[in-house]
Image (cartoon, rainbow, N blue to C red):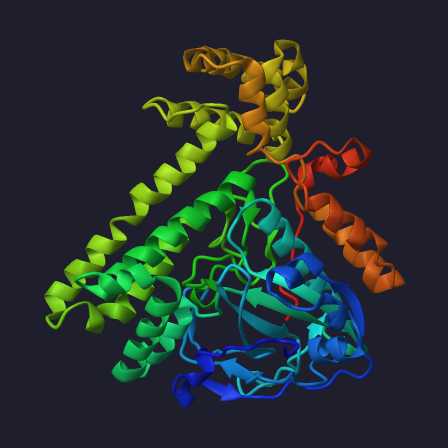
Length: 491
C-alpha cells in the first residue's frame, strides 16, 4: 500500500482546468500537529505521516507516490467585483483519496509556495492563519457543520513577510473537493462551453450523482447546490459563525465551509457584526450572510444558463425556479434550528416570532449569543436557573417578559423538562472558538513558540456540546462583549 492511495480525477480533466505545479520545499519542516483521527478516517498511516517521510510530504518537500500536484484555475466576485482569473495562488492539490466511508476527498497543501496564479505573491502562509484555519475548521466539524478539515500543520522553518516577518507554516487541508462557484465563472467568462459542460458533469458525478439521473441533470445540479448552501448558511447562523469573506471563489459547490481567513464567532449578539478588516461596508456581516449566499448562487446560475436549456428564455426560467427554492429551504433550516435551540420539538407558526423576538432583545441588551442559548438549557429544566440568563442582559426585565411566553410555549410541548434540556444541550454549544482565546493561542505560538494553548483549545473544542468543568474558562465571554474585534485574512 502506498502512503497516500491516490485516485485522482480532477487532474484528468482538460489541462486548462489547472496548472501542474510541484510544491516548493520548506527550509526546515517540523510537524506541529497531525490529526490522527482524520488520518484514520482517510485510510492513511498516521505513524508514517508523523515520521520524517510523512512530514516531508506534508511540507511539500517530497511528492508522494501517486500524487499529481496541480493548482486549480478559477475566477470570482471579490466584494462584488468580478475578477476573471484568480486560482490557487498558494495551494497545491496533491491528489484525491477514497476514505473508509467511500467518499472522495482532496488532499491539498496550503502555503506550499508560488504557482502561476500567485499574482506576484510568495505562495506561503504565516503560522497564525494556519493555526486559525486548523482550529476553526476542526471546531466546525465537531459542531456538526459541513466543512473542510485539517489533516496537519507543519512549520516551515523560514519566515514570511507580511507587515512584519512571521514564522511560516503549511496546512494540509482535506475537502470533498475544492471546486467553487468561481470555478464555473472562470470558464463562463471565457465562453468555454465545452469546459463548462465537463466541469458540470464532473460535479454531478462527484457530488450530486442522483441529479445525473434527472430529466434535466444541470437543473438538478443547481437545485442541489442551492439546497446545500441554504442549509449550510443556516447552520452558520445557528452557532454565531461569521465567514468574513463570502466571495464567489470562497463558496464550494460541495456545500462545505471553505477558506477560513478573517472568520470569527459572535460574542455579544448583533446581526450587523463585521470582523474582517477589509469588509469596510459590511457586505459580509453576520446578518447579511443569507442574502449574500443567494447572490453567489445567482452568479452560479448565470454560468449554467447554456446547459439548462437550448432556448435562453427557458434557461432563465429554469434558473429562476431553482433559485426560488433557496428562501424556503433556508427558512426551514434556520427557524427549525432556532426552535430546537429553544427546546421546541416541532416548528409551529408562531415560533419564528418567538425566537426572533429573543434575538431582538439580545441585540438591544448586548447579550452573549452562545451563553444565552446555553444557559437557557438549564432554565428549561429548573426555573431557578433563569437568573443566570437574566444576568446576560443589560436590562434583565427584557428577558423576563420574553421568558413568560417561552415557558408557555414549552408547556405545549408536553415533554419532560430534563429531556427538553438534554435536547437543547445537544444543539447549543458550551464551547466555541472564542475570538480572544484564538488570538491568545496564536500569540503564544507565534511570539513564544508555545503550542500548548493550541493543543488545549483544540481538545476543548473537540467536545463543544459537553460540559467540561475543568475548562469552564474557555466558555467565558470576553470583557466588553468582544466589541471592536478585527480579523485579517493573512494572505
